[in-house]
Amino acid sequence: MRKIVAMAIAFTLLGVNNASAHQPVNLGKSDTTAAKGPLLVDGTVSFAVRASFTKAREVRAFRAQLKAGDSLEVQYLIIDKAPENKLKVNQLPTLVITSPSGARQVMKLDERTEFLETFSQTLYFYLGRINQRAESGIYNFTMTSKARSAITLGVGYREVPGDVIRGALPTPAATPATTPSVSASPTPTPSPSVSSTPEAGITRAQVEMRNSKNACWSIIDEKVYDLTRWIDSHPGGPSYIQFICGKDGTNSFKAQHSGRANPTARLADFLLGPLAR
Image 1 (cartoon, rainbow, N blue to C red):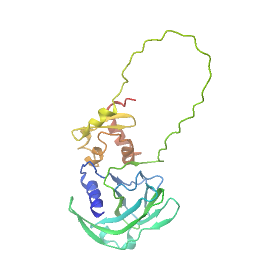
Image 2: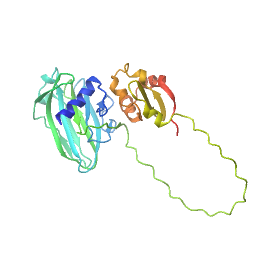
Image 3: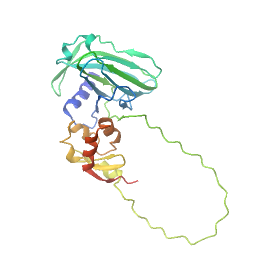
C-alpha cells in the first residue's frame, strides 16, 4: 500500500507517464462541498488527492464511489516541510468521511510514520489511515483547515488508470419499449439504389493509435484534438495530457479545468475535427 501511494504522489510531483499512472487530483477553491468537488468513479483505484489551504476555516471536498464489499482505503499524508511539519495535530485540517448511509467518521491522526518517496526524494509523513469494508454508493470526503497548510490523501489501492468526473454520475438512458404497429401494405415502388457515403469525422480507431508523447490525440466533447504540442508546455506538467492520449479525455479534462476559460480557449488551438459517429 505504501508503495502504491508513493507512486501516486510521485506522478503528481514529477508528471511521470506510465501505462498505469495514477491520475493526480488537485482540489480547487470552488470545491467547497462534496457535490461541487470531483467524483472518483471507482474508489478502489489509487488516487493522490491534493488539497491546499491559505487560512483557517477553508473547506475542500470530493467524492468516491464504491461497491458493497470493496475495501475503503484512505491515508492522510503531509510533506516534511514547513508549515505542515511544524503544525501540531490539532492545527492540521480535519477530514470527515461520510458514508452513503450517512454515517460520519473523523480521520484520527494517530501516527507519524515517515517514508522517503524515492522518485522525487521527498520525505512524507503518514499521519492517519483507514482500511475497512465499504458500503455501496458514494462516499463524501470533507476537509476543513485550521491554518495555512496542504495535505495529500491517498485513496484506493489498485494500480490501474481511473476516471474523475464532476457533477452527477451519468446513468444509462432507458431504452423505450417498442409497440408493434399495424399498417396497410404499401404499394410496391421501385427500390432506390443505395450508395455508401463515408461518414465525416475522425474515428475512435484513429485516435487510439495516437496514444504516445510523440503522437497524442484525444477526444473531448465529441471532438478530436491533437495535443502533441501541448504536452511539454502544459502548466500542470506533461502527465495531465499524456494520461488522455489515445482515448476519450472529456471527464479528465473537465475535472481539472472546469470553469476556467484559459485551458478551454487553449484547447481550441489543437482541434482536428469532429468525432465520427
